[in-house]
Amino acid sequence: MRQALLLLAVSVAAAVAACPASASGSTPIVFGITGGNALPYRVTIQPNGTVRLRGPAWRVRRQIRPAQVRRLRREIQRAHLATSTCTNSLPDFGTRFIRLGDHRFAVRGECEVPFNHVFGDLENAVALRARRG
Image (cartoon, rainbow, N blue to C red):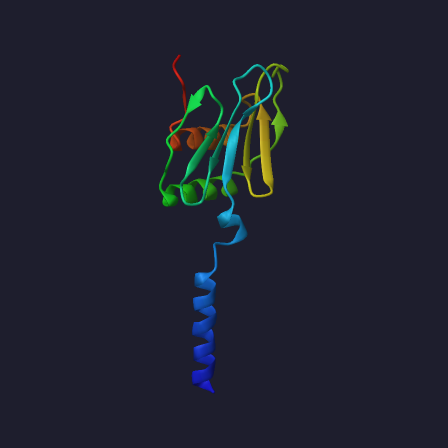
C-alpha cells in the first residue's frame, strides 16, 4: 500500500511538472502608451523572454532572459499598482498601461510612483528606444 501511494505521488508530481506553467505564469506582460498626442506603442514580453513591439517609431531588444521575465512579473504583482488619471494631466497626454493576465493598470500623468517605477523597469528590460529618423 505504501509503495502504491509513493508511486501515485511521484506520478502526480511528474504530471504537474510536465504541464505548462500556471495561467499567471504563461500569460505575457504587455505594456505601452495609447491615446493623446504621444507616439503609441505596445510591447509584449512572452514568458520565454521573446519581446514583440507594435509601434513604428520605437525599437526594442528582441529577447530577454526568462529569469528576468519572472522578476518583472513578481515586481508587477507586488507593486500594488492602480489605475488613475493624475491631477493636472491634460487630455493630450498619452496613457501608459501595464497588463498582466486579466489585470490591467493605466495611468495618465506621473502621480503614481509605484507605476512609474515598474513601467521604467519594463522599458529598461527591453531597452525601449525611440527610432532615430
